Image 1 (cartoon, protein in one colour):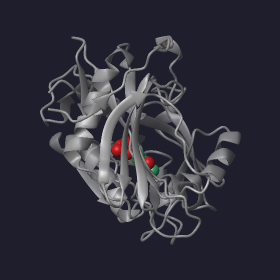
Image 2 (cartoon, protein in one colour):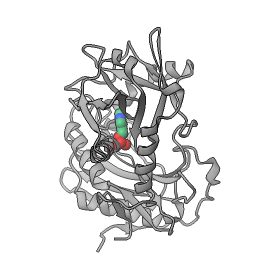
Image 3 (tube, helix red, strand yellow):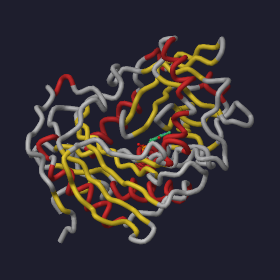
Amino acid sequence: MSGIAIERASALKEKPASGSLGFGKYFSDHMFLLDYSTDKGWYDPRIVPFQNLSLSPAAMVFHYAQEVFEGLKAYRKADGSVQLFRPEANIKRMNDSCERLCIPKIDPELFLDALKTLVRTEISWVPGEPDTSLYLRPFVIATEPHVGVHASSSYIFAIIASPVGAYYAEGLNPVKIFVEAKDVRAVKGGTGQAKTGGNYAATLRAGLEAEQRGFSQVLWLDGINRKYIEEVGSMNVFFKFGDEIATPRLQGSILPGITRDSCLRILRDWGLNVTEREIDVAELANCTEAWGSGTAAVISPIGKIVYGETRYNINGGKIGELTQKLYDYLTGIQWGRIEDPYGWTCSVNS
Ligand SMILES: *Cc1c(COP(=O)(O)O)cnc(C)c1O
């Protein structure tokens, strides 16, 4: 029996047209909230109408960026039922991020119950058209009103929900990527493997510059040697070199993507030669397929990579055969079009 109280909104919003969803522009009628204080621990789990949060201007999140977040989706199957994809992995990763940011961990059972209860409450917000889903954004912020650097004594955990279509305007058309040579995203020992907003703040300048030059995303190199590939914007990255499929090894500065992990498992089960290793940016000359992996874009083919004066055209700028096959298989599992042999999908009704 769920201990989550539900306060329903008195007026419901009009749903956006499915063709106009884009990504992260619309929010559903309700959200989940949970509070933390030192004496009570995490308390008062509830679903309330989607509303502004009221915080002191001295709340520590505004000054010291003590926050973590997650991203996962609810998918509508052809029979109308709704499922999540590997929510336990998001829950575990958020608690790992909490550990890095000195935020108290959240009971995994309560977290899963909160995700399912919110999706059930917002079931009419889960779109059913191809490639659409309800994106869920759990996050924790430090709320103690105190200008002084230490871990906060109070927090809010919230989950908001947004009906989404394709993450990139390009859809499944290959994107153009710019290799950043000046700024770095993260270094080993920092917070690169935690899903925390500060990592993104550090990437905005390079992202803006890349956008102004007509690129969709930035490809990050390691902060020490400035030559090993790390990841792309909000995605991990895979390259095909001859018979080998390679992705950067998780060494502390890269976000351990759940889509990355799913790709590795599937590709290995297909009997392919899959490696996790250091990848020198100069190796791009031998690359025959490349794609980014992440919950938002799922699998995003990469058609062109520009590094200084060097332009790498990958597979003639077209989606590669393996990229397409992986996309079809993974999205097939996520939307319930094909059987899930891994136990990755999770009904919101049980
Ligand atoms: C969330 C995220 C990813 C992708 O992770 P998924 O679990 O596959 O969605 C990759 N890189 C960064 C920096 C991220 O924040």
